[in-house]
Image (cartoon, rainbow, N blue to C red; front, side, top):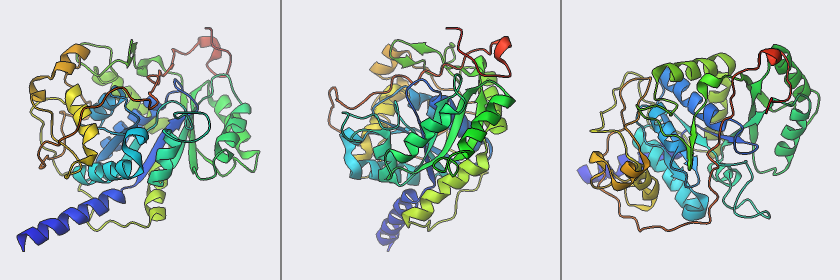
Length: 376
């Protein structure tokens, strides 16, 4: 009876995980600010008492460090369509959401929405993962030098692949109230874009820029350079997202995925007051990579790599320090499964993120209320 109950609970948990509300945050290209929007959404939703499960498409290991810190220690899981395939990505999604008992999942894409391994198909792209998950896409657009042309871009993304559901758009680097109004007028002026929800307009703000290094974004650390290395920076980002984006609309889009997938949760959502167990130490790079590679294991997710609690060999080389979180101590969901066995992997032709440099520069005083060309 005990074994049967355990098996039933496991199946119910996986079903709940497959039905987790989800939204995919993508962009027109690298550098438009999708990491800022994705991490900001994670921070803002965690502060509302929700448990957020983060994901990253492709093999990128730097953005997931930002995700994990923003979500209070919940490990971000890679959904690499090239290496895992459809069944692997879907299994990894369901297992991670079940393990963290997530209320909502935020998936950050890589590069542009339709960029994959070649120019003839969607293979390896964020669009492919969004279709596999049945999740709506929130498109981030750098609107600094755009007004009505931004709607033409949205038209292209809304019609290029009918199987991709473009659910909403976020305009980034907006010059002011007038600029935001022009963008919304443009979206309402065409039949192909008027039904795409404008979730908000983010102003330029250099205070929330994530610094870069050779391989991409700087990891969160106590020595500076990362988004969450200073609580004040996380505070500014969370406040900006809460002020300029419609979080209720974002959650509504995420729930639409659950309704369309045909899955329903069998267990109630976590109480916001339920405590999270502390990790013995911050997740190292080895731990993140091991977690990302483990969806094919029997339990769906693996434990920290051996020796990772004291800093694996890669963590020292990459300079990864223990992530900090403005929402509180770094925490992670309870780990009950044993270490997963995964084979080593070499270089993959899967598309890699260009670090999604955010380019949220300090506002130009002469351009505070209207768009204009960047000084550079």
